[in-house]
Length: 275
Image (tube, rainbow, N blue to C red):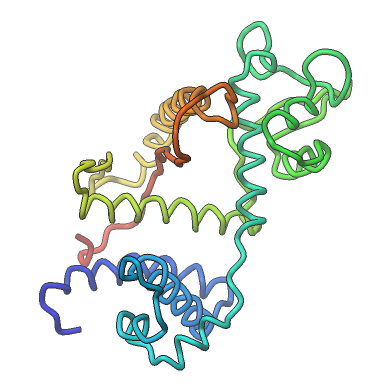
């Protein structure tokens, strides 16, 4: 690691790995397991994104790019692919149901708030909401999950009431790890794009931070801006849903793309080693 021009990249890698390694150790993941995962991703990216145009990516070329021996490349290729489909689908379906409940007029009350919905029956129902915005999933399964995380509550008359404005898995859920994988991936992908934006130009990437704040201001900071951030996200959700083919089937256009933006808070004790 003596390449002078890469030292800032090595430093950045160490910083982003530290919280990840903390999570892995807290959950009993050994270095051997992490190593196999990292090797799998190295080889997968080298195979899919660094091939010579018009030529099949060979084990030999992957070996040259990654620094692994051909034998190691072949060994890692035989490892089972990490399966994140189930976790991703579970999160996306639940999140879509809650977002639609907040914005779609048939499921709002006279004041424009999410209405209390019966499970079945005439008029807008929870089952109709799920069928429209969560695909081919039994409404009862979606209800059980949303009830489990405290997002939905049954009233005395049997109607279902929305209690949370977002789907947030409990701290002990595997769904939290899905958020780790998706949210951090999007942020790093944005940074990667902005390092080499090309003709499309950079993507929006901003933050505000101060490093000499007393502990007493932190709760007020969270209180002041959490609501404003949620409002902004809900406006973006409304705008995007009107242009997404799943939420608005009449939308026309070419290609299929994912787009969005995220907001997050951070706070930590200051260290003289930080910069």
